[in-house]
Amino acid sequence: MARGTIITRTTKKGEKRYYTALWIETPDGGKDQIWRTFDRKRAAEDYLDEESKKAREGEYIEPSHMKFKDFTAEWIEKYPKLAKRPMKPSTFAGYCSVIDKHLNPFFGMMNLGQIRAATIDKDFRAQLPEGLAENTKRNILMLLRTILQSAAEWDLLPGNPFTARRKVRVPASPREKKGRALNPEEIKKLIDTCEGETKTIVAATLLTGMRRAEVFGLRESDIDLEKNLIHIQQTIFWKQGKTWKPEEQGPVFVAPKSKASVRKIDLSPTLRKMLLEHRLRKGNSEGLVFANPDGSPRDPRSFAKYEFRPAVKKAELGALRFHDLRHTFGSLKIAQNEDLLYVCRQMGHSSINITVDIYGHLLRETNPEAAARTDAMIFGKNSAAC
Image 1 (cartoon, rainbow, N blue to C red):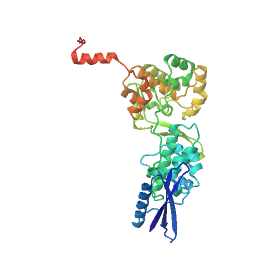
Image 2 (tube, rainbow, N blue to C red):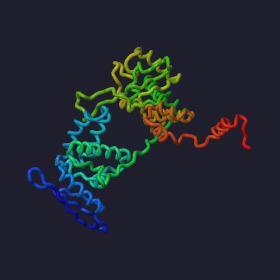
Image 3 (cartoon, one colour):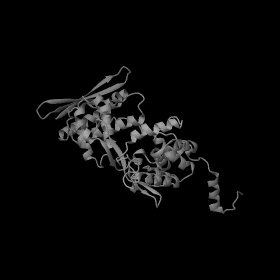
Image 4 (cartoon, rainbow, N blue to C red):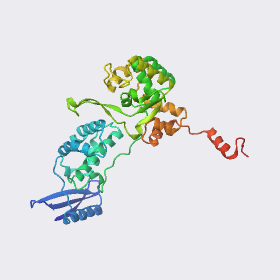
């Protein structure tokens, strides 16, 4: 059986708080006491009624005394195998990083049953490092919610604190940060500064909008020179760091970021010529397009550090990320008044809303010619206002 009580206290600010104490009989004949805090008395009463009913009907799940850090160790081993879709190495590495840097340092020594919505919403959020991007904070909280949901589904918690009556506030997903877009003069300056394979890689990124992992995962068989198309069908990921054992580290090829990322990109005449010349210099029409002399994959991060950044510095273009080449491609397409859906598909965005969020500020707000074309469609080409 379960019985409980409500204790009312007033804070220094004069606000009332309602503390519920719920006593649960444990299987060994002892008793366990669970405390929760509510801002409204009715919420406290409803909670006691619901939990007491669960205990009477045998549905009550006693909060686990398992340490959070022990559960995350088990979770990171089991969850990837239970997920609906195969987890990509980059996602796995990101989860491990968030757990090690943010979740375990705060929750690690807590019992799972001690974690409350208020603990997450006030204490945990307050201690996150200043200057942390809102999107990063959101990702941290979303991962914590997923972990606690697994604890609830595995009968270690009666419920997920994120879905309790007092819900945890998760920041809304912010718009993707806009990057820098080069103008045509800057593009030519950068390409002219680069040499050899570096030039081809930079040009290929600028003229296709491919992501870095797509560029270095591109195979010769993915280029259709007859139809002037590039097929994006795989990306490269480099397993590095303590997330993987030494024997597991190295490059792996994985599916693109999303279903929309599996796409066909139109090949421009200039890039077609450059890729063909690159293939002839290489003397190999098989394997990766951009590879080491022995045919092994190139590390994208090493390329960015030792080839791309020096080229940018030599071209005197200031701060420029490799990803800005992709952003330049999208901006150029918008400047050409290309159809927004076409731009979305060429870039592999999962939704046209993403394209609008990133490039919407570049769209024309007024277009008198469009209004005139509407007149012509309805009233004829020689129509004029009466």
